[in-house]
Amino acid sequence: MRRFKRTLVAAALATTVVAGTTGWASGTAQQAMTGPPPGTSQWIADTSLGRPLPDPDRAAPAEVAAFFRGLDEAQRHRLARRHPGVVGNLDGVPVALRYEANALAAARDARYGHLAGRRLLAFDPRGRGLVAEVFGDLERSRHVAVVVPGSDIDAGSYDRARSPYGTPAGMARQLRAATRGRTAVIAWAGYTTPVGVGPDAATGGLAEAGAERLASLTGGLVATGAPAPSLFCHSYGSVVCGLAAADVKAKDLVVFGSPGMRAANVAELGTNARVWAAKAPDDWISRVPHVAFLGLGHGEDPASDAFGARRVPAEGARGHDGYFAPGTDSLRAFAAIARGEAA
Image (cartoon, rainbow, N blue to C red; front, side, top):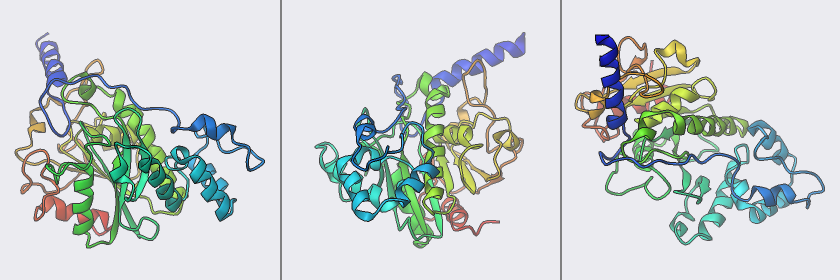
C-alpha cells in the first residue's frame, strides 16, 4: 500500500512538473497536427500529368521519391508552383524542390514572409505552424543531424533570439559550427509540441503523433539520397524519439534533458541506432519523477545506469537549455557524434 501511494504521488507530480523547454506556467491542451499536408485535396484532383499524383496520406517516402525521379524538370517545377503546400511538406520530394515550394508558401503568408529566403524542408502555417530549416548543404553533406525540440516550440518560436541555445534553430547553428561545417543540421519544429506544464507534457499523445512525422522525415531523407541522420532530442522531444526509435532511419539517438523515452531501457526501444544520454547537474528535469503510471510520466531516466545508454559528459552545461552552449563538453561530444567520430 505504501508503494502504491508513492506511485500515485509521483504520477501527480509528473502531471505538474514534466515540461519542455521554457516555462512553469500552466499548460494548455493542444491538438496534434496529423494527416496530409495543406492543399492535398487540390493535389489529388490534379490530372495535368495524365496520371494520378501520389496520395500524400498513403504514399511512403520511397514511393514519392520514385515518382519525382520519373518527372522532368519542367514537370517538377510546375507541381511546386501549383501545389507548394504539398510539394514542400511531402517526404521523398527532392530537397531543392522542397526549398522552392516552401519559399513560395512562406512568401504568401504575411506572418511568415521572413522565412521565405531560408532553406525550409517543411513549412505548414496551419495552427501554431510547423517548420523545418536546414543549416548547411543537405544534398552533399556526408553527415546529417536533426534537432528534435521539446515544449513551447512552433513556427513562431523555433528561432527565438532570447534563447540562442534552447531553440531548435539555435541548437542547429551551434552544432553545425562545432562540426566545423562538416554536418548539415535540420532544426525540426515539425510536430505539435506541448505548451507549458500540463497533461500534454506528462502524457504521450502529442509525442505519438510527432513520432510518426519524425519517422516519415528520416525516411524521406534516406529516400532522396541523404545519409541516415543522428537525432538530437531535447526534453519532451526525447519522448518523441523514444516512441519513434523502432521506425526512424537513424544512426544515433542522442537525448538530453530527458523526462524519459517511454521505455525501461535501450533494448525496449527496438532500435539498431546508438543511444546516447546527457543530463546537466543542475537541469531541473532531475526533479521530474521518472514514473509511468496510467499513461502519466515517461518512464526510466535515460541518463541512469539502468537504462543502458552511452553517457555524454554534461558537467559544464548549465540548466535545461545549456547543452549546446559554446565551450561545453556536451557540445563537443555532440559534434563528435554528428561527425561520426564518437566511439
